[in-house]
Image 1 (spheres, helix red, strand yellow):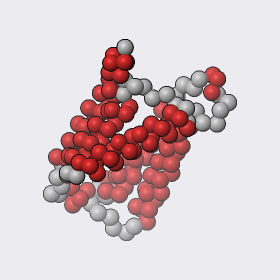
Image 2: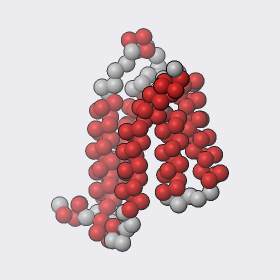
Image 3: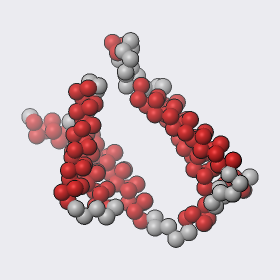
Image 4: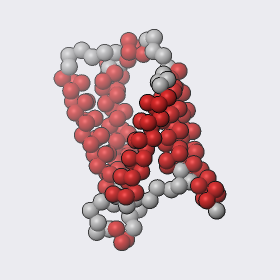
Length: 162
């Protein structure tokens, strides 16, 4: 049993498997508007697809880790690892989730990506601004115009707009 917990591939695949099962179970409880029940693409469709893909991939990773004769141990993998960027990104994600309803999708996402680029060492401002703004605007257009999903503009937009 301790050999299972010291193999980083098995532990990683097991964590992804547990998360994907929880995510998949949660995605089935997303409420669907009665008018959209017969539509092919609803608010449940993408989460169920992503959860199913993660579940299948984690099972494949777990199976492949058992086929390998020797795997890397966790203690060797984390020795000398710089944890500061990881912890800073986790705090940055928590700030993104907290500020999302106030700033809205576009502004919160652009600020999150800009901060993450800076944190990870990208100092070319023009590149990071164009990538973050381009990606966020592309996703906003895709979700709102193509898939007709509502993305909240945020409390700040409503306060400044009135």
